[in-house]
Length: 485
Image 1 (cartoon, rainbow, N blue to C red):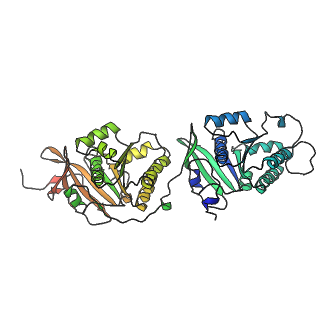
Image 2 (image 1 turned 30 degrees about the vertical axis):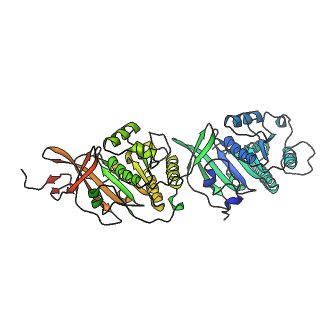
Image 3 (image 1 turned 120 degrees about the vertical axis):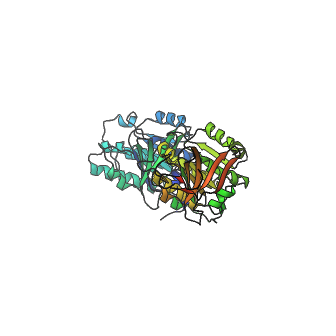
């Protein structure tokens, strides 16, 4: 396997080099396939524009759209292709005005004008480093049968590679015109597709190297294409030392035997309004005082509500942001794909040294992100594994919808994802509604197995003494066992 990134040819598409472990292998042929409108020409322009920026010679053999259309498209997306060479073989060009039958590589002694001679002449004159044939499937109409088509394309590909070129071929993939034969003739196959809620890219073939598997998110914007790789947590790991992350509230730390263990995933679980977000922010506030950086991704509340509630309980989010110890991202419905979201997390961890990542709202996570499929929690598992591998402390708030009734730590059966589960619960005592907090699970250390009363005041969190007299919290019928009337 060739894994030397220094010998790779950049794709020009942001994010794609990461998927290909550095880019294309030099002097190979890649088939870019997809239905009409999937972005194959834009994909090709990225490749050629990157080559021009690197002082490489590029050749665009266009059999579909005419040159002026392609140049206009490049200009619209901000590509500088003034130095790009074109060989115009589109149906609107002179090459297809003749009634002659063209051949490709049947004979070197062909005396009449032919496509092969045009291509050979162009290659010999400009000696290109990068060549795009768009779309190569147009040659199928010029071949007498499928066998001749395959032979001719193989000859074309081998000829271009023998001249030292790295080649991209595009294919209009459709049921009415399968391109399986082309996929066998090339070194790599990149598929551009579309799901109901996002565009995708996946690499189904790549000779000579491993690649990142999966259907990755692809976007087309005014600046061109962007690929957001699917998160594979197994690719990331760094040395880490576990310590305790204090909340700054002695009684809460006592529940947790000193605090949360760094580099683990903690779920704060309970019904709405019980204080899950505030509890998570309390750990971030204390970490900020030590100069540690945190990131909060909020799926449940808008920015104004989140900030007002935090300020009301003495958690100064604006001050933490100004000092660079906190970043807050409020993510609305369908604003991001899952791959964009995980790429943001990676950037915060790897580029900005975030030590705590909080995902506020598993229901919002599940419903807001595009591309999560039918099992959104598998993506949360990957995020958790990534954070652990990187030594980052993860905090996830999970809303349990029943305010009263049978106790459940998580609605989605996610307790196996968490290293620790802190439960928050409403209970009734003498006609008043109170809050309690306790630890249901903690893999990394011992913990206090009793509940404590939780209050959220204008001065912050207040956690009381253990409540040994409180019974029935797990059965759904809490009761106070004491001698008071």
